[in-house]
Length: 223
Image (cartoon, rainbow, N blue to C red; front, side):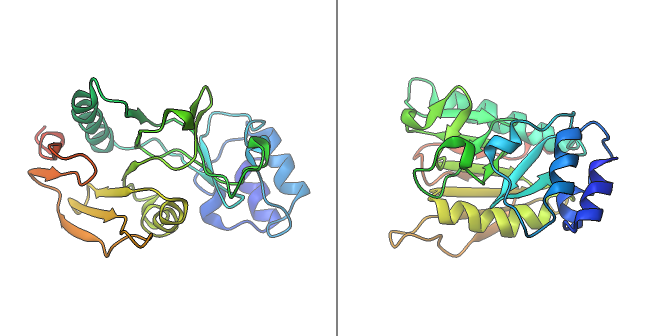
């Protein structure tokens, strides 16, 4: 039985499983059938047991498939961002990582296996080395960038925006290649994100967290 069939039978929302037709995720199929939607929150311990080629995220215990593979333009944007950010960060304590890279966002001090939120942002910058381990990152990155795909649009702009705000991400960017729009969320002194700044994803854009860093958004669209 495929993950899609198991998800449908167990009452999971289509957005959680319908992007995959994989029949190889046997452990996830079994977990869905044994734990109908609303009865169980999956956790990082479960996540590590899932087999198959699909990539998954967990948001508050709900699984979301990250298939299909992103578009060429999506990847052009990610590569351009990483090159520019990594060049700026040379000699600095902050580090940049690109998906697939697990970011665990615990509610408190629960053990890793009990964490119910694990995401794979397109690009993250982390400045606290204590958050890093061989499994990825535990705790909020300082800067998160998501390049929006049709299959992830709502999740990136609503669920993940709320998630990153709640967990303390300091700056969050979304880049929509189809509309060529950049949206920036910056953390206010009061704790939450300030109202978003939306502008054309063109030219050089300042990064609030890193004075002097200006990201050129034009090259990925020039091919």
